[in-house]
Length: 223
Image (cartoon, rainbow, N blue to C red; front, side):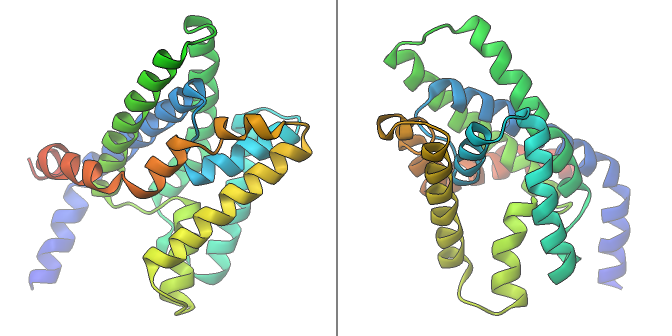
């Protein structure tokens, strides 16, 4: 009976959860554009995307859809349990919003100084944690990249999530750097796609996301 009640409550809140997911993805996409302006490193998956973007001559938004469609196919084959509304919102919107945000900010913040870049990094971290809290609290599926580690751990029964996620993150960063160098980038430019921002997003975002979860996202959902 309790499970039925929770299921009904979940359905009743579907519009709000969908809106929270959409809001969260948009905020996260804007934050990635800010990270790119900071040029001090982006999150591990975006490090891979930055390398791929440097090598493949098509718009970032379209490239993001293609890359995530490949990961979506992986998830659909091995465990579609993790695929939901949020997965498709992320797949089709994040890349294009990031592309637009970055292009717009380049016209506003021209040749930023180190202090401005650091400020953008801090703002980007706070915003991505804020957006992630809404996206995660809504619980309508995960991104295709998140699904990879979850499938390895829960479906294939290989290792613990925290260690598998670290491995997939490291693989993404390495691939991103290799692709960036193959595209003609220099070693000295690597910190712009895999730097301090990458370390922060990989290891230190959890507490801030939880803060926004507890104080903002969950109260909004349960209102």
